[in-house]
Length: 304
Image (cartoon, rainbow, N blue to C red; front, top):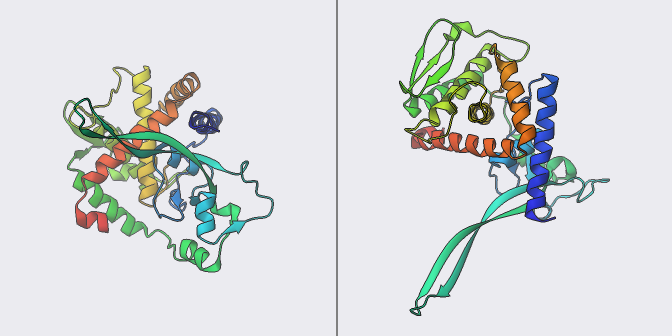
């Protein structure tokens, strides 16, 4: 399998899974829960990002690694696991350096990135040594909601974005005024899909994602009116960014409850079917949005 085929497989898997959930009218972002560990490499401890994060979250999240890495950690195959059929391709960029002489006989060093792929396997596919299992899964604490909320509020404060709370139930970001408007916290209530707290922060992180796309910041193309392609792509980006943020902060991303949510879904379904790279591109932009927010955090906040 070459890198183009691997990327095609990832895009198709994710697109098919998400479109299916959208068409069923379900919460297509349900894999992004506070109880689920963000997809993480078992050897390096680094979280997977962008399209890889989305893809691996769709299949359960948790720990993944290449077979070489699992072997290095002392793991063995579980009975019945097939090395190819049970793997998940991930895409990554590999830095390359070339050196050659120019016409003047001087050495020139060039740096460039090459897109590559590798197969990873879930921790569920291997037998883990007792010490490794304890290290990966033994010390996970349940999310303390009070601490999580305090941490998120500090995180949002460090962004420096203007947020006003106004009665009336509307949430939106205005690039013209460089301000986010949110309903009062008291207007968010518990539902079958999530708690009032999860609804509030899912909405807030969605609007923060729009805020990052401002001409003053990441300069994304947002579209001019509801329903056009750039508008739909921006909304998809914001939903994914909110999911990434909620997962990172230990809370669950809940389904959008806006009245026109069904119209958003219809637009996303159409866009995903017409463009197999729509999800991958949205995930890339969403990850960039999160990275921008992370870059604004103080050293103390990052260490917390």
